[in-house]
Image (tube, rainbow, N blue to C red; front, side, top):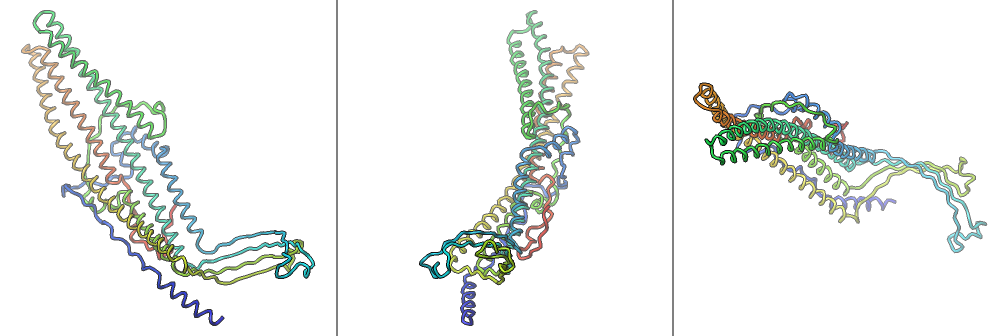
Length: 482
């Protein structure tokens, strides 16, 4: 027995020589590289219920229904629940484990065995075992703690991904609903344009009957009237398509949607917060998910590294054992055992190294995915912000054109009222006003859609409360998940 201890010590030392060094936390981007954004930004980050800024009870009701009944959120919720179950499994494998075993056998002795049956007086006998076993893994090297930490971080990543799914859904619902309001506003403009063109057609027919206007003027009016009616039909169809899209997002039939009241389009804000470049990393749920994935991958590398160390555990067993089933429950059949166990991973070293290298590769991939998510988020914010600024400038010029056309229409009507002109100039001026109104409405709808895209790019009210980089896989205490 004395010679066994030096051999064991040499074995442990040999195993320690093969242990890889601890993997350092990879360097991650800590700021979003925004490009082309003006420095004098002074807006606020979106609130969690950002859609309430539009002060539309119909939209509020749709978002509330989406948050409770949408199939995409149920799917994301199942992924989060599965991640929480993985945490439970990892925690269950730590600490004290127990098992209950029961066995009954009918055994025949070999006539050529160590003890022939003729010496015992029987060939067949019964064997009964009933035992309760305990095993405690000391986890000196943190393998189980690293597994629990990885499972917790993966659950946090799943929670952030659920927030990302929620953001995508709420933005999609708002975009479709505000698009429906824009389509209905286009329908109203197209309806007015049809009425004006029908008035021009009546005047043209009267002038043609009196021989003071050529027929080609009437044909031109007919063509423009058909085009206006086509646009009205197109916008009415687009509005119905948007209702169908909203119903699909909510997981219901279009007939189950209420009839909405037409409302003026809300104004666009679109201001960026002043700390967007730095704080964006904590405001985007997809970036938060990627950061938790990095932490989980780092914990997996620690778990793979800990597998190189000896596994020390303490086992105990109490039970009953008898070769006569009738005496199995008697006091003389009791048995017990207790003792330590040491598992040395010597001959599986190649497998352990391959597992460790795979964990390191996954960590590198997670870090690269995080940096890519940061760059994509920065590009998304920059793109939407610049597009919104461009649309604001275009809307300003369009409003100037609309104001000029409205003034021309007022002058044309005043001249007609004084007998200095006829109704043709008045109708033509009103048609020009409607054309400018339709174009302004299109830009307004584009600006709202871009503002929604910017809200999504800014994270839509999400906030990463805990800093993943502040966690340490060597510490067993972690912030509990709900």
